[in-house]
Each structure stands twice: as C-alpha cells, then as structure tokens.
Image 1 (tube, helix red, strand yellow):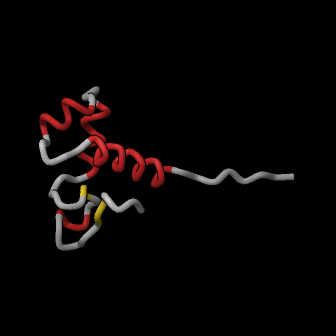
Image 2: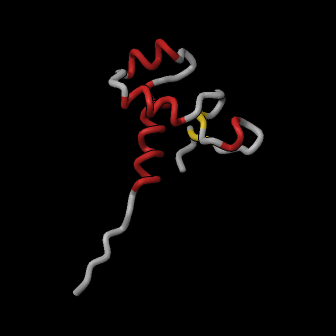
Image 3: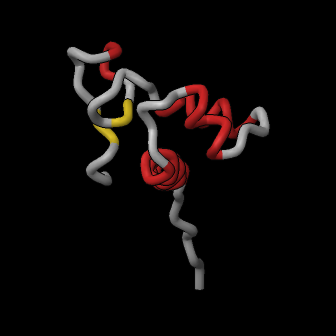
Length: 72
C-alpha cells in the first residue's frame, strides 16, 4: 500500500483515507466518477494535493487488480 493512504479503525471507522486528513478515498473516487478534474477536487478539498489524488487512484487500481489464470 502506498504511504499516502491510511486505514485506521479509529478514524472514519477504518475506511481508507488520505493520510493526515479525514477524507475517505471513496469521496475522491466519487468526485472523479462525476467528472471532476484534479483542480476541482482540490478546490472542494483544499487539504488534498495532486499526489494524494493519484495515490487514491493507485490504491483503487490495486484493489481491483486480478490475476488471469492461464491454462495450457
């Protein structure tokens, strides 16, 4: 896991958040899905940086990654 995403049962009931904030990763992903760009997200959540948003995307990508089974 990258060092910008934190999971702590004492913060936001253990949801993945951007470290040092109380901003859950899913909020950022929802904003991206709604068409917000990085500038708009940072305007809505000024504690975030572009690197934080990229870290959330990377985290989500790793969660959804799967292995393909190759049969011979």
